[in-house]
Structures are given as structure tokens and as C-alpha cells.
Length: 334
Image 1 (spheres, rainbow, N blue to C red):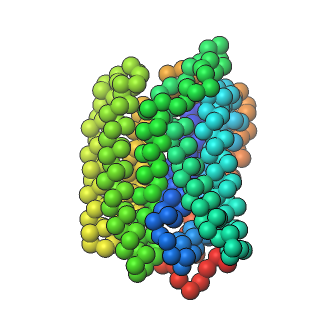
Image 2 (spheres, rainbow, N blue to C red; image 1 turned 90 degrees about the horizontal axis):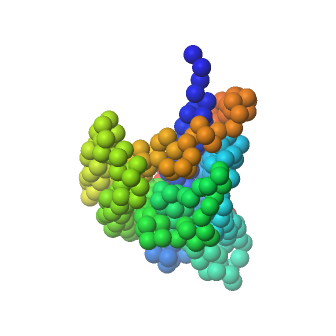
Image 3 (tube, one colour; image 1 turned 45 degrees about the horizontal axis):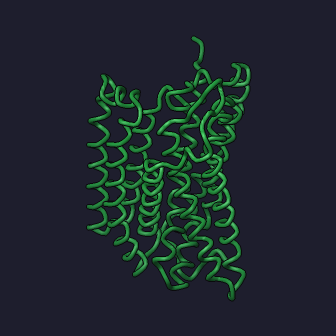
């Protein structure tokens, strides 16, 4: 039986992007929440909570982007010109954020400047990721296997909505991460923020979900045609379930369940996007089979992925296991 290599690679890249969103999402969220915690000691503890893992989390972004270029070159060559502005802004924000992570521990006079660089870089990166997602969902103009749209096509009311939705969602992940990893007054304030951002995230998910099927006729047909119509009913029910679990965990002062429920919301949102996209990699323009590299390349790269991805999963799991539990306020990255 022949392997459907384009489908396998589409699944692997989708997994890498999801891993990036759920892992880097919470540490971006911690940065987004920086302005809501004014005391230096609180900010120190917040950064220490993500210090052991934040850099490794971005491995998945490299894997997803590099995999797209190598395995689906047509999609890469089509999507990148359409999203140059938000992607460049995202990368610059991530650079500022990474530099701030190191420099704020090395200076006293400019510490507040690097605090704002960390917070601003996190917020801009999250916003640009959401805008890029919205621009991709609403569709990219393709003609003769190339991008045929304009410079500002990515900037629309829908993409701005998805940008804000991702920003608020990452703040929710960051708040529930702090609930899980910190204690005392910091954790209590994070619990309050998590409640507010949970309501805002679910509301944004609802608006985006109601808007998306009407962007493209293909979306509307897929969402309400059997058998995918079953997911149209199932996904909202699961979202409500995760939301209830999240609220219950916050109310009963559980440490872990709010974070897991927030991750569940992101996984379900991602599944909904996947239902809308499939089998396209450039929505309604280019399928995963049309965009795929030659089969020999896919097979060769799959051998490397079979070694690389388990290795990344292994060291990521080990890092989280070693640094599990509450952060000691007296210890730190510095």
C-alpha cells in the first residue's frame, strides 16, 4: 500500500504548528500580562516560570516554517508574499522579546525599558500571528501558481478580529500557566485575569466561528455537509465543556485543570480551522497534493523527520518534567 506522503507531511506540519501555538502561546501570554503586574518581584517570578522552556518552545515554529518551505514549496512561495508584513512584524517582535529576556537581568537603569520590550514583543507577536491566521482563512488570491493580491490584502476586519482573539487567548494561556506555576498573591491575581480572559476568548471564538463559514462558499458547504456537519455540532459542545471545566477549576482554586482546559480550547479552535481548510493548504486555491514537492523529496525528508520529531518531543517532555511544580520565588533565571 503506497503512502500518501503529502497528507502525512500536512499532518506533521499541522502538528508542529499546533505544538508551537499551545507551547509558545503560554509564554507569550506571560509577557502580554506583564503590564498587569507592577512589582519587580512579581515580574521576576513570571519570567522565571517560563525561563527553562521558552526558547525550546520556539523550535516548533522553526520546524513548521522550515517544513513548509521544504515540503510544500508552492504553498510557501504563495503564502509568504501575501503575509510578508505581519510575518516580519512577528519575527521582529520575537527578536525584541528574546533580547529583553536576557538584558532585563543585566541592567538596573534600563530594566523598565526591557520590561516593556518583553511585554510589547509578546503582544505584537501574538497579534501578528492572529492577523496572519485570519488573512489565511479569508483566502489568498492565486493566479498562475503565484500570489496575485495586493500588499494590504492581509489587513481586514476579519483578520483584525482573529488577531485580537489570539492575543486574548494567549493571555488566557499565560494566566492559567501562572495559576499552575506560581503561588500567593501573584497566583490569585492571575486567577482573576484568567476568568476575564476565558470569557473574552470564548466570546471571540464564537464570533470567529459564526463569521468563518460565510467567508467562502466552500467553508459554508463543508461546515454543514455530512459528515463534517457532525463536527459542527460536536466542537461547540466540547468548547462549552472546556469552558465549564476552566471556570470550575478557577472557582475551586485548582492549579492544573484551568491550564489544561485552556489548552483544550485552543486544540478545538485549531480543529475547527482544519475542518475549514482541508484539503487545501492555501484555502480554496491550492490543495496539499498540488503544493507538494516531488515524492522522492518527501520520502527523504520523512526519514529525517522520523528521527527529529521524536527527539524534540523527548527533550521537550524532559525539560517540562525537570522543571515541574511551583516556582520558588527566591530562585531565578539570573
